Image 1 (tube, protein in one colour):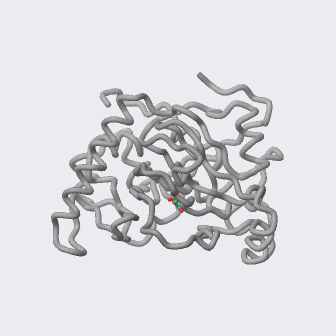
Image 2 (cartoon, rainbow, N blue to C red):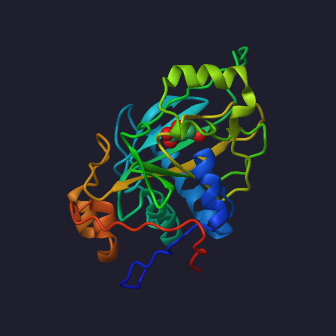
Length: 284
Ligand SMILES: O=C(O)CCC(=O)C(=O)O
């Protein structure tokens, strides 16, 4: 990145993408990353996985640690500082533009994660998912111009192809707006499984959603490894997730000036709000 300006599209979604997001609580935007970007990120994640597995248990590698370390499911916490390709992903202008549209203003990075998983050892699946949320309707959501907004937004980008058997993220459609007991909503979804939507998309596609949406890792039954990278973002005055604050040394030495506020949260209460109308066409 050489340009001194950090230009993000606004609005970043087409009206139809925005409507999909409002109705279901998520939208999958295919091929947000080029094949080269996917390749660099995939290599970066495999390198990080190798280095973490070679390190002592609990040890940090380039600022990252394994939050979960099972042979079939590894969760990587704070990947920001681990690889230049990951930094480029987390500061990708189009992806940050998508996030800002859903937040309704400028954002800071709140966390960076990845998941690498494969089919679990043979046990009979009980048909249930690890459904969870990071915020709740009303507490972390609001409406402006008649459109849904959320103050905790994620981009989940798959670096491997996701067919129906490849364990793509699942969510309970529409749960981002339902201010009822989470357990009762989950019971409804198990009763009518058409309410559970799953990501099926080519490598390099991005699932965009607000964390009030009930979601989980999907059930993987194929022989393929799934690799996803995740950026979490909030308005500028919010805090990073526990243990996810970027190191001062990294911000000083590695972060480009135009990304400082995004990565460090230094804009704090100078939050700049921006809200679209549904029919506004997407910017180029
Ligand atoms: O592994 C997944 O697909 C879901 C990840 C997730 O739950 C999250 O980022 O909050």
